[in-house]
Image 1 (cartoon, rainbow, N blue to C red):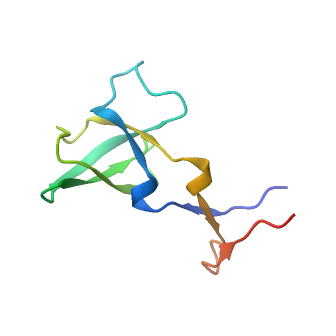
Image 2: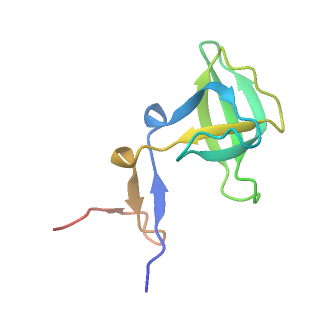
Length: 99
């Protein structure tokens, strides 16, 4: 049986599709598509609060200020595996793989 874990990644390692928005059927392979809920310009970057289409697991994402996003837009996001961290959901402690 599997175990539930929380997954984390540092914001600087998240990769957003170059043109920011994804159209239906045009998602980047391996990317996860989020729906934009809030857009907050911060100068050089934009803070985007987005959620999975199923409506749970929101994420805060930093995107370049050149992105033009609005509420309801689709955003293709890549989370490179080499930068993912696993945490125990009960204790919050980092889970370190052992060989």
